[in-house]
Image 1 (tube, rainbow, N blue to C red):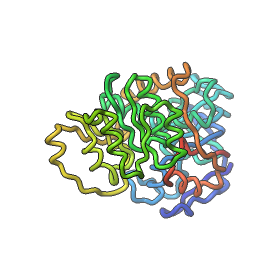
Image 2: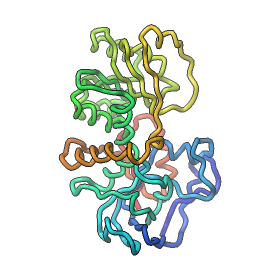
Image 3: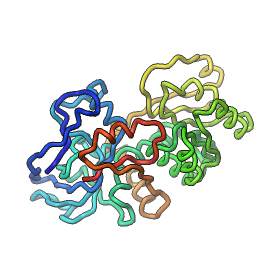
Image 4: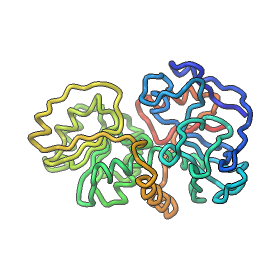
Length: 324
C-alpha cells in the first residue's frame, strides 16, 4: 500500500508518500480500505513537532477516515468485510495512520456509517461534529432561546456547529472572510452572516442583538479574536475557545464587568462514557437528515502537503479530504 510518512518534523514538504507493507489485523482488529481521510488543522501542528501531541518518528499522520472493511481479525464480531465504516479521533484510541490506502484499527475504534452519508462526509465524524457538539452543549450550555456567534464558521467545525445549533433552535450568527464563505453560511441557514475581515462586523452583531451581545461564542482563532469576543459577549455570556495559534493581549476587566465564562476545550479530554452520547446523537442526525456534513477540497493522497497548506489558508470551506 501507499502511505504518507513523516521522517522528520518540519514544514509541509516533510509529508512524503512511500510504499509500505499492507497491515495484517490481530484478533480484535480490522483493516479498512481508505476511501477518504480527513485533514485537520491539528494534523499540521503535529507535523511541526511543536504541538502538545508529538508522535515518535517516523509516523503516518491522520486520525480521521472512512472506507470499507477489507479484512477482520478472528474475534471480531461487530463488523464484517464490506461494511461501510469510519474511524476518528473522537472515538478511537489511535490518532495516527489514516493518511494511507489501508488503515489498521481496533474493532472498538470503528463505527458503521449510515447509507445516506458519503465516505468524504463521514470523515467529519472524527473531529468536526463532536468538537462542535461538545463546544455548544457541554462547555457552552447553549439553549434554544439563546444566540450563538460562530467566529470562523465556514470551515468544517464551523459548519457542523451551525447545523447543530440550528437543530437545537438557537439563533445563529456566523462569520467568514470571503464572499464564498458568506454564501455558504447563508445556505446553511444562519440568521446573520458577517465578514470578519470587515471593520464593521462587530457593529452588525451588536445591532442584530439589539445591543445586548451574544450569549455564546465559539472561537476558532482566539489569538486574533478573543478581545473582540469579550466586547461582543452579553451579560453572563460564555466564550469557548476551539482554535488558537499564539498569544493575545486582553483586558480581563470585561470578564469581571459582565461575569463572563471564557473556557477552552480539547476533544481528547473526553472519555468513552462522555463521547458515546455525543456520537449516538450525531449518528441519529446523520441518519434522519438533520445533519449533512459539508465537504470542501478533495486532494489526492500523494499531495498531502498541499492539503496541509489549504486547511490553514483563509477562506476555509467545509472539510478538507484526502482520497487514495
